[in-house]
Every structure is written in structure tokens, then in C-alpha cells.
Amino acid sequence: MCSSIAEKDKVTEAIKSGANNYVIKAFNADSLKIKVESLIDRDISFCPTLAAKLKKKGINSES
Image (cartoon, rainbow, N blue to C red):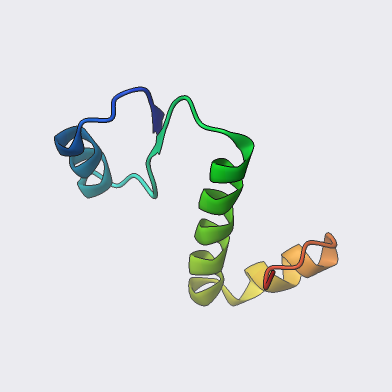
């Protein structure tokens, strides 16, 4: 979820409601990259085929 609302209660509510993660606008490329890499790392453990798909596309999931 991406939102301009940074209130702790709203972030907690979004996560409890099913959001994978919460990115507060305005964000920079580095912080977004870290969030995406974190999601990929987390999802690889739940989806064994994800690492193979990323590798096939030339994306190193372990960097």
C-alpha cells in the first residue's frame, strides 16, 4: 500500500487488513528498492518457483 498518511494507527490498520507492506509518500528510489527487495526475499521462502522465475529473468534474488 502506498499512502501519504503516516499516522501509526493507520499504518497498523492497513497491515492488519492485509496490506503486504506500507510505503509512505513521498519516498525515494532507494527506500522503495529496499521495500521491494524485502518483499521478494520474504516471498521466496513461501514460493519456491519465484527464485527460479527471477533467475530466468536475470534478477539475482540473493543480492
